[in-house]
Length: 543
Image (tube, rainbow, N blue to C red):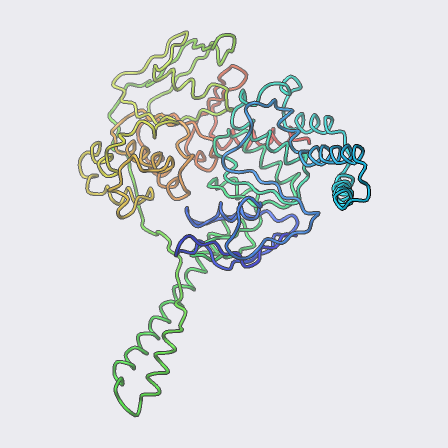
């Protein structure tokens, strides 16, 4: 359906990837994997046609349509929901406008024998052919059907897109994709900044309604559930596996073991040949043999082994100071902004040592509740923090609170206490700060790097109530695993807001669901809650 032939992308003297080729078939669900910086997003942009390669090309038929959902949504805040969705038919309206303009010009001109008039007729004929080849549909009706199917209400159609959360904006973009009826959908980190309900909905949409899909994601549960093929981009090459992510990890280890064996055998052979050259160099009878071996060594392609960080980093929080039996008691909490009620008459009690999850759609009040607990906003009712509570708080904007003038190492060193100070370089390495990275100023770090650094800093402070608001948005899969293991072994109290189901699994043993201006307490694990939630979502998916 779509073939990628000999793609090469280079930056100065470094090849991001070199001469890669593969085919995307109808109904393929592909996870595009690789380390940060391997070129995944670049490759996706090239397939989408928004970026050019140095060499090679993407081949597809004129009838094949590709829809691309970038990592950062570009929804126009000056449009209504319906207007934004109708942009799916942009080609139709642009061709119609162009054809109307050409017909008007031909009707006004009288130089019928001129070359320019003949060129005008030819242009109008070409545009007309493209226009009439497009399927004639009732665009307004199609937009309405798609938006209703995606969970919007009719009264939402005329609301500006700026009033909607990230999850609902993604649904607007998906409405556009649905209306285009593409043969291939490209998704770059689609689960970032959206709630669990939206993630589950997206999974079901891709499984039930989409044709071919290529996705980049750090959400293990998401890619495991939707993909049947994994393409890994590493060391400028690709490796193609007919397997989902979990199975791919097993196959990759097998491949790396074979690579390592072949590499060792090659290095042994090279050493033998070099010893031969050193021994007989200058010996007249062996001159031809020595020259032949030297030429062979020069032309030899060295086997490369994938760099896999196999260091067994085990990070533990400092022991939590003992607190009172009830770190948090909230009674009759209510919060409104003008006429908008976020939640009302909420009661919640969290006992010492409990690990609880706040879940619900974006905009239902999870972060607002945390701000109330932290006394950052005024609320009605009472919110009582228990005896001897030391709070560690990771907000969604935590990265912006770091000291820009300090280095990476100084940032963590100033909060580390005791023996853990000897392990700081290893801890930073677990969160992708290697070598000279630790001497960088915070001011030059990317947003993702600052987020990771803020998380490391939090991990080193002795607290007995941890409040984490979407801590995994910018963490890769290994960093997530390190953090999760630390939280599983944490002996304090945990309040966790996250849309990452794999990260939540096994962590939370009580769930507070934020829904319809209420906070509902569920005495069940997050795993049980998600199973029930997915079943309900499947029933709601009707496009």
